[in-house]
Length: 80
Image (cartoon, rainbow, N blue to C red):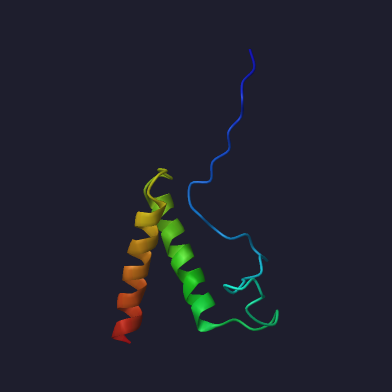
């Protein structure tokens, strides 16, 4: 009897150093430049991961965490 090992990633994330790509598969910009959209994406990802950790790393709610992070950050950005 063999046991299979399954690896699951609870929250979708990008690896550090992963180049962002546009919809046509090209790099979004030079290595030193970062767009406002990329910065916002990173802020949302960090906050969503914080929600995941605060919940005790409970799996299956990554989308909910992401949407809550977006709402919270858009509220903060929209008020400034």
